[in-house]
Amino acid sequence: MDLIEKNFYRIGEVAQILNIPTSTLRFWESQFTIIKPRRNERGTRFYTPSDVEKIRMVYYLVKEKGLKLDAAQEQIRKNHSGVEQKFEALERLKSVRERVKSLLDAANDLKL
Image (cartoon, rainbow, N blue to C red):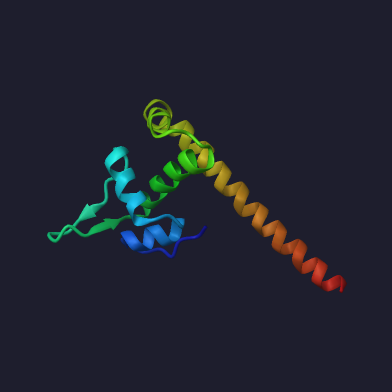
C-alpha cells in the first residue's frame, strides 16, 4: 500500500491506511515501545512515515502472522532487523503480485 508522502499523519489517517480501529493503534502504542508518535500540547498524536512503517510491521506480526503481543514484542526486540527485512520483502512481493495481477487482467481484457 503506497502512502501519500506527508510529514505527519493523524491517528485517524493511520487507522484508515491500515484499516484498523484507532483504539487498536492506541493499544499497540501502549504495548510496543517502537511506536512513539509525537504529540502536540493538546495531546494530538502525529505519526511520521517511519512510525507508520513500524505500525505496519506490528500489524504484519500480529494480524498476518498471528503472533500474540508478547511474541511479537519478543521478535522485534531480539531480531528487529530480521523482522524488518522479512516484512519489507513480503511488502515488495505483495506489490509485485498486484502489478502482475493488473497486467494479467489487462491482457485478458484485450483477448475479449
